[in-house]
Image (cartoon, rainbow, N blue to C red; front, side, top):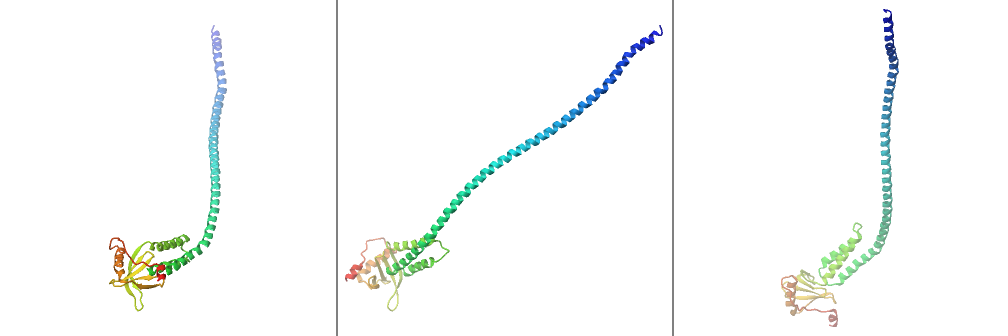
Amino acid sequence: MPSFFPRLLAVAVLPCCLQLYAGSLSAAPLDAALDESERLSAEAKASQARIDQLDDATREMLNEYRSALQQTEALKAYNKQLQELTAAQSKELVGFQRQLDSIERTQEAVTPQMSRMVEVLGEFIAADLPFLPDERADRLAGLQDLLPRADVSLAEKYRRILEAYQIESDYGRTLEAWRGELPGDAESRSVEFLRLGRVMLYYQTLDAHESGWWNPQTRAWEVLDGSARRPLTQAIAIARQQQAPAYLQLPVKTLAEEAAQ
């Protein structure tokens, strides 16, 4: 009996030992598998990280490519606008050149015409009634000095000439009185002058004792009779706005009447 119990114990212990041995033998491959799984997982994470980085880089490059395409399209549109603008400016330059050529031709045609206008104005003043001689002579001299000046535009010269013509034209529609010097054989006298448009030019001494008129036929001053004294005095006062306008009876002589006499 005693020998039976050790055998029985050995038989009972042996399976446990075998199980423990088998467990120890199976634990080594499992750890290796776990290690391999962790390694593969780490590599997968690293690969995914690299893929994510490549995806981000690809997306960034794609955005840059799209942005470059947009800039290219914008540059193409801008270049097209510049080409159209350049073409339009070229047409404008051609038009400006034509205008300049036309202006030069106009200057060539207008400059002699303006010189002739000033010349005619001088002839007209010389042949007209001798009123405001200094003022009119200064205006004419100013135009003569203006014509050859290169710093004054053609338009300004033409405007000044027309202005002088307008002033001369206005003289024919106004009644004007002023004090001036009447030239005489011995010496000049201070008198009151009266201009009736361009029809008549009178004078009257300051004491109103003598009156006269400019005879365009003889181009000389002639004395009027005493009947002209009162109407001339009244007309001078009206011209100076010292009296209200009234009906005047002034001695008026035409060239035909003067020639008939």
